Length: 86
Image 1 (tube, rainbow, N blue to C red):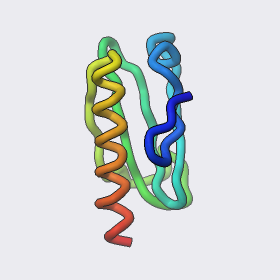
Image 2: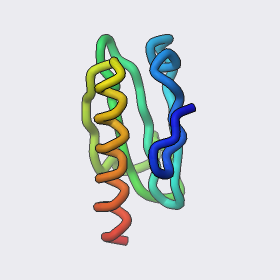
Image 3: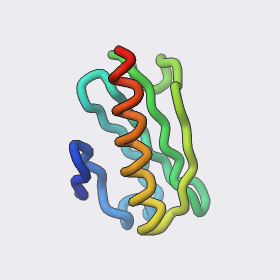
């Protein structure tokens, strides 16, 4: 697993094998899904799962090393923005 700031996210090969990943940091929740040649990052706040929550942001990234780095930056930005509002 890669660790960027506070996010533990699997390596690129995990997503290239078409595996989804969900994680959380306090009330901040995120999901990463590979779709075709992209990684889709989704974030929400609260105690509930993805299916029962209001999605606050979603972003698409290339399914490669650069895209995964962009995803880390985006998650950090989302975490900072959304948790400041809590």
